[in-house]
Image (cartoon, one colour):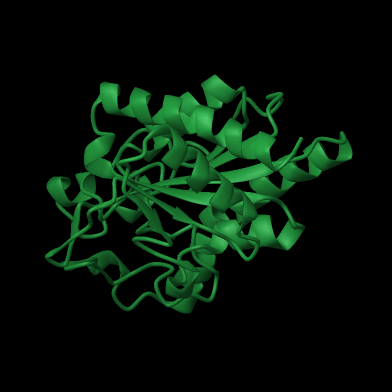
Length: 255
């Protein structure tokens, strides 16, 4: 959201010394548009919708960080400025349209402005994750990467029935173990497997770059955002995920 106060840093790391094997990442934590970019041509309502960020994802990630004593790395910049979960070469790095919403401030974006946003917002986010993982490796700690997102209940008039979706990197083992743990806890839970997205959609850069790239166990969690817009739903999912992440880790003897 537009804010006339001094801009915060592009990335925040909470609880970097957390004792957990888990490292939590929230790519789309904020709808903040840096003051220098105005409002990208969007009205207030548009800037509050899923177009601009992943509602509820940061709240769940923060509670997970607390429950697990895990580090949390979060972007502080709206994904319409630059999407930290996209490769630098991605055509939708700074999208001109999101679902059916046009983003006027990204229309005709120059290569210079694209590079400036990469330098100021995208690279610092991934450098922060890299530094944290490097420090943990140097200290002899295993890291299990967990990225937390949310998705819309309806996309282009198509309903999405799953309250949770799991997306795996090249190594499926940890994601499959998490799916099994969730199913064991709630047998009637509809769990999307590579839904509503998968790596084939180009939306798993963080998972691949830091998970596959380092050979780490990793998973990407997508929660339908109507499940996590209120504190009770946030707590329900954070507590469930904390239990099931631990169960999955122990089943594979990670850490």
